[in-house]
Length: 192
Length: 192
DNA sequence: GTCTATAAAGCGATAGAC
DNA sequence: GTCTATCGCTTTATAGAC
Image (cartoon, rainbow over all chains, first blue to last red; front, side):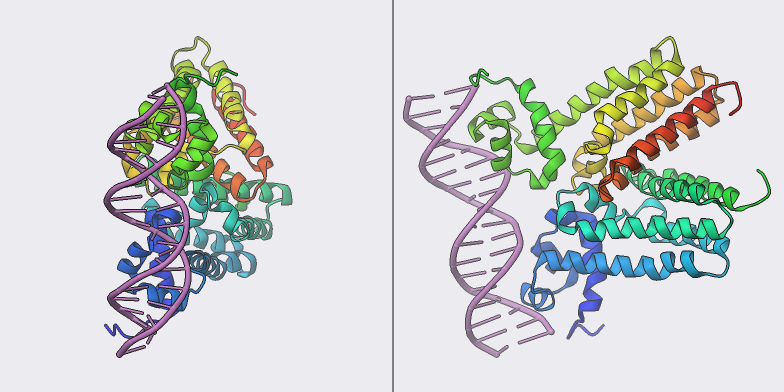
């Protein structure tokens, strides 16, 4: 529990949780300082650009995580069907079965969207493209793969919204399971 | 263009658009005053509870609109299939083919969710229940109706998120059309 | 009912000691 | 690298004139 000399990389995940919980505007430097255990001096030492740079760092970390754990396997793993199944598992873990919101999706609906438009757009565009790639490699026709990948991303984001709105994580679990089956059927030569 | 003596009812829709555009935290009284053309004195005259009361009024108006235009027809219209088709049209109009976000969904992901939890929950719960009712009346089995209504609300919310994130309204249109077909198939005795 | 003036608090950001 | 003190600005909300 060495309190001394924090590293920027250690702070970013904490920032992510604060932004998730309070939103960008709601995450005041007071709250951020409380949750990270750092004073304003330290925070501005790591992030000279202030809150905007903090949020950008969080988005970059999220992007990197999804690239390594989701997008790349979807694009490159030898078994695309296993990669798709892995994606479902990763999503379920990452969003804690619906208890954790998608910060990128929340930003998309927020007034800060324009400020982080590139990162937000990239996150979803890459996700959709990587999943479409996996579906094609698993045997789906290109147009089917395109539609199905888009519907999958939509279903995940919508399930996070509804799950949180109704305060019911079973909504997310149910939706994700339906999505999993739909993807499995589309990549399985055997009919339902 | 009578500028004098505004009515509370005239102000609420304007407030809705401001909250959509700026979010709850981002909608400062300065911006609200600008967009409504009212000074702080007038705003606090209509809404003694300040921003919180303004947002509550907006949510109530949204709820009333959906109750009259969507939920009640789904529950009570003589032809449930026509009501479901009407819902799709109403949703497409209301969200301007994806250009307009769902304020209730945005609140669900925001830090203000807890403050408006009852309204947010009610909005989605009623939507899901009303659609399930229409599906049942149109011949769907109860469990199918329950699942399909939930998936429909999820798809609409997810499509709004993705459409806005990618800045591409065709995402919303495409998703809504797919949803329409899925609902039609589920209520049509003839196979696809 | 509408306005301006003002209060009181909180905000992001900076400066400088250590 | 971390802290505290402080600046300047914006915020919500109120008071009181008209």
